[in-house]
Image (tube, rainbow, N blue to C red; front, top):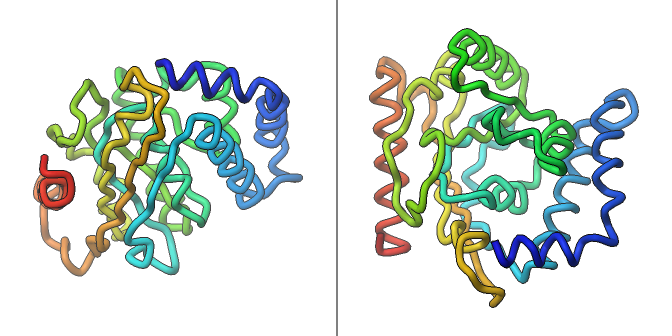
Length: 237
């Protein structure tokens, strides 16, 4: 929380970015997805600079060169998606809990990168949303989905995955990219302003040729285990 306050205070002179995000989101005829993503990454870089946050990216060569795919990271805190955007050069977007998506800045940011809001208590909306994501991934978009569904002081450990969220990739035979976040929780959870380093690791994609014939639960378990094993090796969790 202390670092969050620092980031907000130091970026007050740039408060104009919030209405600009809203304007860009409202005018897709003027601002392409690439332009919006570029502006989103600028906002993230300014935030990390103000907060003395350094994020190191690894394994970018593992990301599919063409077509859409879905990234499934472990979940540690509010900085997680921002750390991925910081290291992921090509446009991608996010699935976020609707209940957490309407705060100032968050709302404009999500709209600008054309993210999806998931209503966890609305089963029909969830099914419809996953279908929309499948169609967009098949058309070449890239998504970030957190299969743990939330976080609660889990730090460098992995909780159970919700297997259903993998259907959006499996349905269209898209590559599934496991993403490992390390020390991401420290950004806003630790009561400190000291310089901090987080890590984003992109693991080799889990392709259709590998998961063909597997159940959704089996796919979920494989991705969970790959992430958990990698964290254990790198962070000693």
